[in-house]
Image (cartoon, rainbow, N blue to C red; front, top):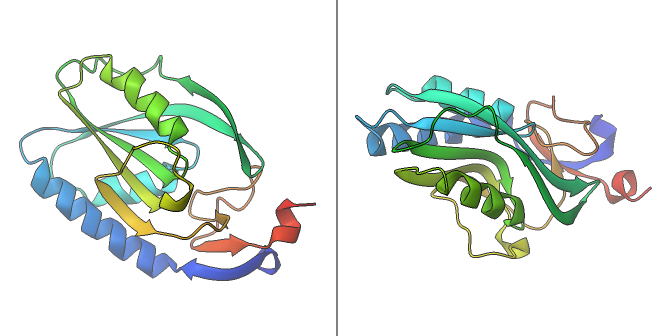
Length: 178
């Protein structure tokens, strides 16, 4: 798998350290609010696990499934499965995502979640790629801002591969263009 990467952009140590900083910020900001973390599967599962194990306040967790990508391109059609969520009325929700890219998927999810009566809704994203944004959406808690490169690892994938890498790296174009 390493042969498929141009470079490693974020080591496991960097990812864990930044995630601990985000957890501390959330713990401070949400003291006495019992936030509900909602992770977007599949990409956010590693980041969310690391984030929540470092949050020092009571919280709850749930997951939703969403997608709009085929290979490296967004299809423009967002599919989200939110049926298994608890009642969101009056809840402080933190939507946890692996990467904030075009913003189309998260915008759709935010509309759906907000319509269920949340008290507040914020985004926590491990990676942010603002150069590709097609919406006004911004994350309140962002791990790293990155350039427009196709990254994998630490939950991020290409066609379901590379999620298990303990770091984030740039995939060689010949891998995803073939």
